[in-house]
Image (cartoon, rainbow, N blue to C red; front, top):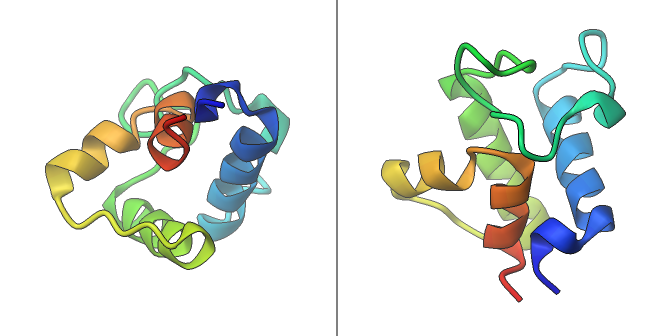
Length: 90
């Protein structure tokens, strides 16, 4: 099953992001839109490059996936659905 169809995986990703980036006081996990941007001016989360580094380390620790290319990282971290599909392509 593709990651974007796996509600459990998407909830794990949202929780990981909220916890790793200390967002619990700003946004609830349930408020994060699956298709909404994770970074940039239109993001509800207000994440920056330091957050991206924290998230990538947490993803490596939790899922054993390493993303070393910055362009690939930006593509993967565009939304929860894109992130989930990268982690679980099928």
